[in-house]
Length: 393
Image: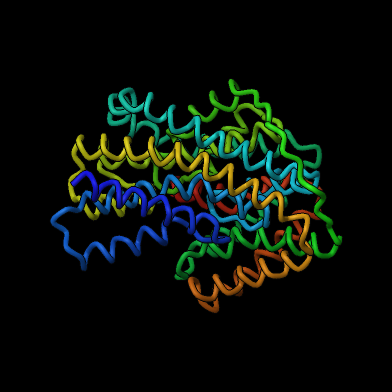
């Protein structure tokens, strides 16, 4: 049995590495596929599939920052990293940007393990209370985003415009509508502007980043549990909420985003035990396979998170160095065009023809928002505004 568990752990890490490096691919899509396979397979040992999913999800969370930063091609979880990460890439510091994100993930693994006993005790009684006040917290976040900008009118327009776009698109019956929405706003829009401006990627440096740990860790510990245990909220909202609580510098924000991504994913595993509700696709996949999630399974998942997290950290460093060595030796305009083509193909396969229309509209909206000169994080209005409306009405 131990050998089988090691095999599925290894396969999960391999699958997470491949999926993490595929531009725009979200881990939830793979989680659904694994559940389908598990349902038609021999399920005498469902724990093997749980090991596979947990290892794959954690590895994907680490590796997902590489295409986001080096190719400017994000998905829902890494959309915000494409902003400061791509800027650092153009300064020859792409490797540093990936290291900042993955270091956040790495520390998040250990914080998750340490926090689990406290969360198991606190989450059930305060779950309902937080659920009632969450829209007002997000309204506060939106107000802070506007009031802290120099261009307040432009910022308000960007938040409202992307918010309305998000409301319309998320209410359409289109499969994985977030893929074209976020890829357009944060991915292809930036890539098109890079092509237009004939961006040249310089030779990349290999410096070890220095991070001010205290502030990002503190705000992530406040924001991540809120978003990790409540429906309709995810990694991006947690990062925006955390950065609103305490403004961080560009480098620290990448660390914050990696830390938040890992914690929100980890908290979703805890939530299927603590409140019997899955808050991510992979958590729901585990819940569907196991049915009732017992404490022994949660402990197993946390062990897998620890092992896969350590391995994924060193994998991401090696692969980031490889990409950093190659990126300035190729024509970045051609890479940008190829990445846009990949996004189009992926959108057509997953979200269909109407998904492609969404991608085009979101791309044009993203270009307009970028040209206003406001911070690109304000485009997260596409998720913040729909979430506020969901909770209020």
